Length: 106
Image (tube, rainbow, N blue to C red):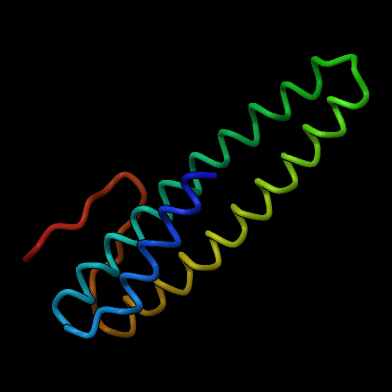
């Protein structure tokens, strides 16, 4: 779960930034990274689901199901954080960054 550690660090930097200009830039970066990670985790969940269907070993299937549930929980948390950041961007009149786009300075 290296990805979740990276995201946690990005959120910590964002929360610790007092400079308004940098804060806005970090907000867009963090939001973009969260949306990207959420999409990737969605793909990971699908891959795990396919693996569960192909295994005949009950113990392995149970572990894979646990991993899938953990990934789904992480994806839901990321989506909640992303929505919260979008609301903050809207409240501060910053452009909302959607998946597949990058933040650009005006």
